[in-house]
Length: 153
Image (cartoon, rainbow, N blue to C red; front, top):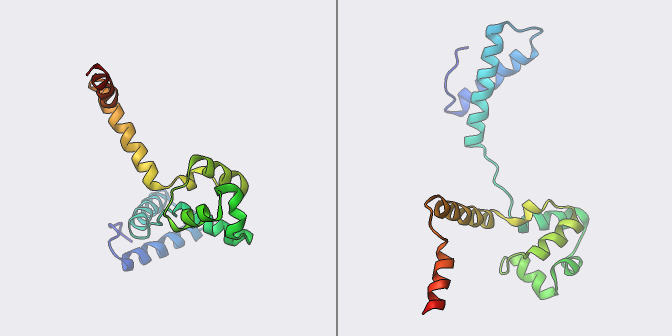
């Protein structure tokens, strides 16, 4: 089989069959080893692009752990707060606080990074990038200069 870019499911299926045949072989020649390596790389790239798995939201992670451990909303009150607060968090009306993330992580054995959420991660990354740009340009941070000018006025 020649090595070509994988652009559709038919080519993907043929590549998988060829990978399986090469993996089942008793021994491989150097050429077959290179072919196997190339096919695996192409299949991985195709699958990442076409079968990507979305990151679960923090709420979905909490609900999954509740389901797996037979927990109710009432069981989350010591970690999140009142019944109303638990309801607001699970409905997405209130974000998780750092204290809530810590408590849930410890109690439910959930890695904290799964509870932070991609929106918060993106905001933090953008803030960090902005700060780094300010530092690279040799400027003071805008928030500090505004405070100083407000005090001076």
